[in-house]
Image 1 (tube, protein in one colour):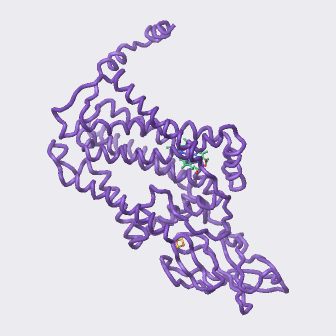
Image 2 (tube, protein in one colour; image 1 turned 90 degrees about the horizontal axis):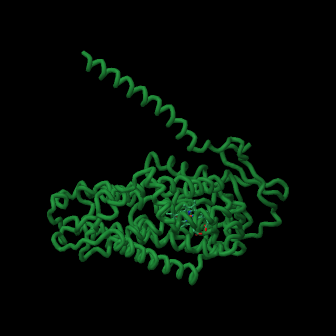
Image 3 (spheres, chains in turn brown, orange; image 1 turned 180 degrees about the vertical axis):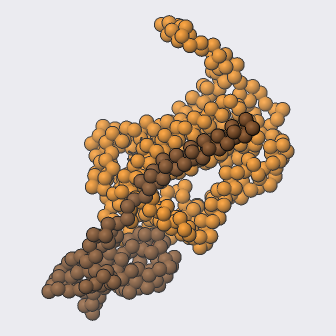
Length: 146
Length: 348
Ligand code: HEM
Ligand code: FES
């Protein structure tokens, strides 16, 4: 009987300490996980003006907290894509001669619409929407376009 | 004077047990004793890293706007700054090499066998810490190369299903490698890792003193005893002095250089590859699908960690050919993958 009571109390104590430890550990772990990107991150940004974009040139800029690229094709069309390689995150390079993006880290290639031409990347580069207002070029995300 | 100081302590705390222990401690010497110097050398190099690291931290500023500039300031303006940084840079490379040699030599001598299992496990954890030190330190100069190498490093866990994204986020401190990552890497490099290392290394060294050095099975009966003090300590000190001389020679003849500051929005330049000791992982990731590579490396590391418990023969004092061959296979694999990575990236 005496040992039983002792065992019982030991168990209660162990459970209590475990719960307490949880109370300490949980906030610590939550603290270490960074808060998600705030929703007030602009979903539409001004990039440059049309006078500054020669045909067959690219301009890199920051959008949605990651690198992005605006390309003016030889025919004058504009394209905007995420420049963050979908493999392991390096910033891709624009190869004007062949109109594609090349990643120097492990050699992935993407066409002008972001489609994978050559691995190791498996997913396409996200494409953004380009809009012109006078000579100003804006880039925004597809699904939130007004 | 010396006598007075010793007496001062002796009157208050009895030092006799320590003195006796030092006087009577002996070390077994045998044909393969040479390899045992690498453990002491690793301890010495870690001390050098801690001292030079603290010195660098007096001037270093962990912010994307100032990090590269502060390292440039250390290199160009601070008296002997180039030397201290170069010692820290080369010391890191030497340390990784010495710890690897120490690990493989104790492996092939089966020094992990009972009763030294915990020493092996602590040793592997310390190797992990040394690699973590190198990975986190690498980002600090905030150069194009260090930026993209870190980016690839923190994104590699993404291939692990489920928790991969979580791991990458915790290391990055945000959606992408940036200011938050630099703060995290700096805190890990200068606070978390040194404290953890201090605890694990103390335990490892404490155990080595309690258990003494092991004698390889093949050398049983062919050993001589040397006094720990002063004979062995003097030899160890000579090795440390030699190691320090080589380290200084490298630091002065080939000072660490400082790459240009990264502009994270601009494309990654050609030739991004990890430091030499991560190349075998890098090459494995390039050769087979990533998920397979991560699986194989994780499983391999786990087996390696648990070797003292798997190799029952050695613990019973029998020869275990299988584990010798296994160690050899691991060594050959790592060397071959590293060489392949060198050759293939040079061609690129
Ligand atoms: C096992 C121990 C350590 C290793 C292997 C190590 C490794 C490294 C490496 C590889 C770098 C980058 C070097 C470069 O390219 O410039 C670095 C930088 C740095 N480390 Fe350490 N480190 C260690 C301990 C420490 C400690 C204990 C501190 C401070 C408390 C420290 C402070 C620094 C600082 C401030 C830098 C940035 C300056 C620079 O990049 O030259 N390190 N470390
Ligand atoms: S990060 Fe672009 S190919 Fe690996």
